[in-house]
Amino acid sequence: MKILVSACLLGENCKYNAQSNKNDAVLKLAEKHKLIPICPECMAGLPIPRVPSEIKGNRVYSKDGQDLTDKFRDGAEKSLYVAEKSECRVAILKERSPSCGFGEIYDGSFSGRTKSGNGITAQLLYNNGIKIFGESRIDGIDFDNI
Image (cartoon, rainbow, N blue to C red; front, side, top):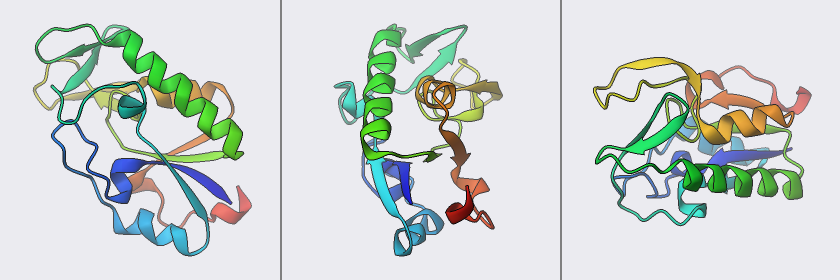
């Protein structure tokens, strides 16, 4: 199976702070599946490193107040294109991210607090029939039978 994966979970240093969120459990899936990396923020042309961003209301703002909603939407569209061209029905995305979070995201206050909601990319993928998992929720999932 082909699985769309947040590139930071695969060890790519594409986070806002030029680090990764390398996750060994996600990497282990490459033994049985083809992992297709995406970083919606990089795909939208945002730099590494970059000022952190969070969703407030229905917009995405950087910590210094810049409205990046259009960039995040562009990255989401490009991610959906990759998913469709790669025939990915499943995605493993970085939890709480303003792009990739699914079910819970940071609340827009840059205080570390979270709220219910989805990142821009996660929502678009979900709306297009892609099953979304956060990295902490993949243990025990039989990806061959999804």
